[in-house]
Image (cartoon, rainbow, N blue to C red; front, side):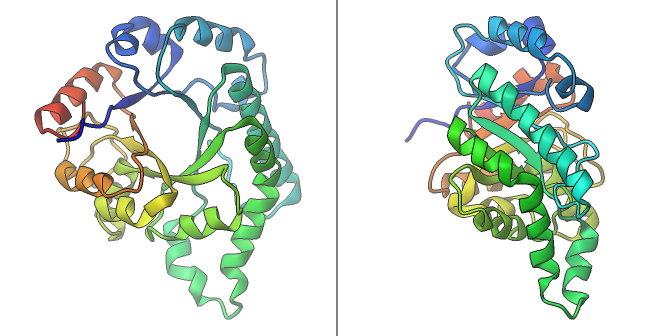
Length: 274
C-alpha cells in the first residue's frame, strides 16, 4: 500500500506560534492567511513577513499564501477597478517573493447567477467577456508569477459547474495558473445550489488540480468545520484524489485551528491521509 498523502494546513503566523507542533511533526505544506486584506497588502507587511520567516525557519514543507479576495471580483469589467485588482495581486506576489512561497490561492469569479444566466444571452461572448475581464485583471500577475515560480490556483466559491474554472485556467495558456477545489464550498453549493458532489469537482479538475482546501460542513453554509463534524463523504473525496494524475497540496482550512489535530487524526483513522 502506498503511503497516505500528507495533510497541510492554512494558518496565520499567530496560529503557528501558538501551535509549534503543527510545524514539526511532519513537513506539512503551509498556507499563510495573513496577507489577503487590503490594509495589510497596502501597508507595511514586511515586519509580519519577517516574523513568518522566523516562525517557519527549518520548516520542510512547501509554502503558499491565500491571495486577496475580499471585494475583489477578478472579472470586474471596469478598467479602474481592474487596475486595483491588478495592484493587489502584484502586492501579494511581492509577499510570495519575500517569503519564497510557490503557490497563491485566489477566488473564482463565477456565481450561481452566472450558471443560470450566461447562456441566456444571444451573444455567445458572454462567457468570453468574463474571461477577457479576468485577463485584464490577472494577466500582469500571471506573467510575474511565471517569472517567480509561483502557481496561482483558482478555487471554487459559488461555482455550480465544476468545469467552468477549467476553461478560465486553460485560457491563460500558462503553467502559472491551475485549479483549486474547496471541499466546503463545493458541498455548500451542492446543498443550496444543486451542484454536483464534492468528489465530482475533484475528478473533473483532472490534471489542472494542484490545490485542495479541506474542511467539513453541512451543505447549508460555509462552515469550515473540522473533518468529521459535517456531512462531506470523505472516502469518496479521497478516492477521487487517488485518481488524480498527481496529488495536489491538501490544506486543512478550519475556522478553529484547535481542530487541526483532530482532523488529521480523523483522516488517519479512516486510512485516508496523515
